[in-house]
Length: 127
View 1 (cartoon, one colour):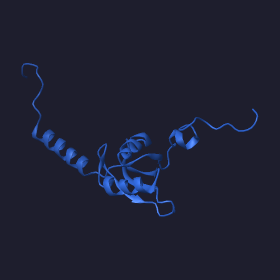
View 2: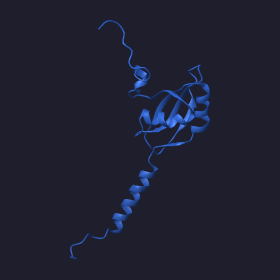
View 3: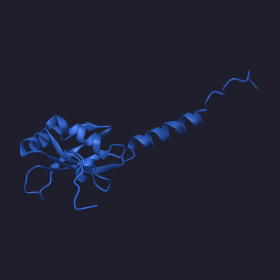
């Protein structure tokens, strides 16, 4: 018995903590994919040229052209960390130009998708 203070960690405890920390550091990060549409091709090219390889909330982004779109404004962003939402991705891309659309694949899109971004929601027909 000692004086009742905290016990010193054993060598085994320290080794276990070190092994856990090493495993956590080497674990693959859970990432998502995002779709970004820039307002024009100049802004999209700036995003590809300057934001590919940049860090966002602990993740490293890969920014690529979406070749399925003939407008040269749509980008695929890989490596988005799980904690990031569409708003964080959109804010990250603002340095390249005006972001017309941003979404995380498989998640709810931002408000611009539903017509609430510019000018408010679109109403159709008599209600």
